[in-house]
Amino acid sequence: MAKGSGKKKEDDGRKLVASNRKARHDYLIEDTFEAGLVLMGTEVKALRMGRASLVDGWASFTGDELYLEGVHIPEYISGTWTNHTPRRRRKLLLNRKELDRIMHKTRESGHTIVPLQLYFKDGRAKVEIAIAKGKKEYDKRHALRERQDRREAERALGTRG
Image (tube, rainbow, N blue to C red):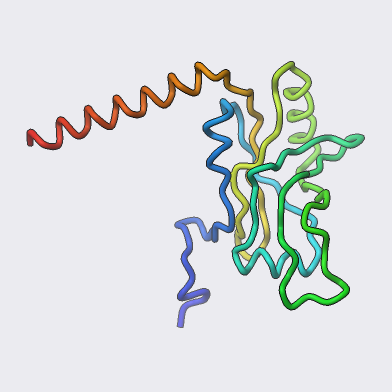
């Protein structure tokens, strides 16, 4: 039997745990990075059960290290006194070159770091973070209108053929 059979996996060996679809609506994504996470055992077990929320998450620098904040990983059901707190700060693992690049870009006004996806890659928990700039309300409406127009055009072409 193949390793990991019965589990839904993407082509590159990733098992998606949580996705932040709202981030792509609220922010203009400029650059993305894949980072490892420093987690406790009960957090990993809760993630393997597919329980997490990235909606209120962001990343910030403390000194020269990057931390993920506001991400909700609920307590592990079978955990005991060793359980973790659901919204604790979690250190992100990136190399120094990437950290310097992120720090330089986020010093520009209006830029922030938001998590896009939380997944397992080859058995290790990873988070995809993005350097993003907040969209204005009219930008959000404009993007929504473009998407609707494109869908209608595809529908019109599809019904003719």
